Image (cartoon, rainbow, N blue to C red; front, side, top):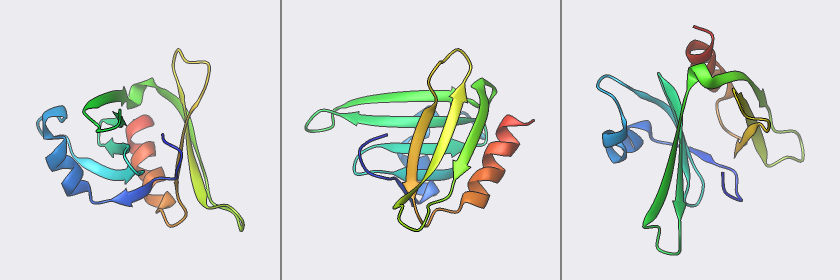
Length: 120
C-alpha cells in the first residue's frame, strides 16, 4: 500500500467518503491513509483503496471479506523502525498482503477488530 507507512485517520470521514461501498449497517472501525491510498477495516471486511494516476481519477478498490483471511500478524515498530506491520494471508493467494502502518497506531485495537472479524 504505497511507499510510505499509513497513519490512522478519522473513521467517520472514511465512512462518508466511501458510503456507496458500505452495506446498510456496516461500520468503519479503523482507517489508515498514506499520501494517497486508504485502507480501512469494517465490521465485515478489509477494504483497500488505491488512488492511481497523476490526478487520482482512476481508483482501484479491493474488498476482502474476513472469511478470506486465513491468518494475520501484527508486528510492532522497533527502536529503529518507523512503522509497524500488518500482514494478511489470503485464501487462494501465495503471497501475503502487507500494510505498513505508523508507529503510533493502536495495535491492540486493530488486533481486536481483526480477531472479531476473522475468528467468528
